[in-house]
Length: 61
Image (cartoon, rainbow, N blue to C red; front, side, top):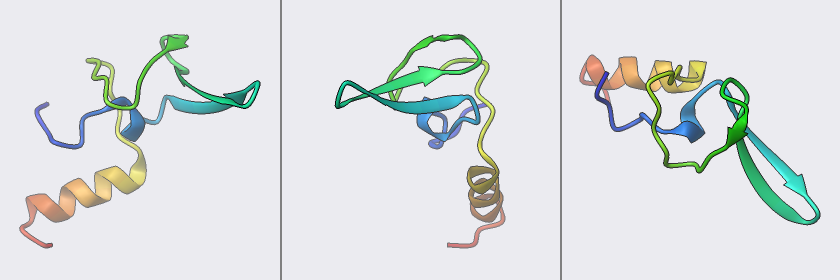
């Protein structure tokens, strides 16, 4: 699936955690640290991202 939305931060498995005053980003599915803009094949978009993708597919702004 090629989409401009495809990034870890838009995935249902993405977790943002504050540790020792610092933000850490993790993939709950893969179990390791990631970055917001990384892309993996296991990407599953969040429901709000799916809705936006559908709107764009239908040509709505």
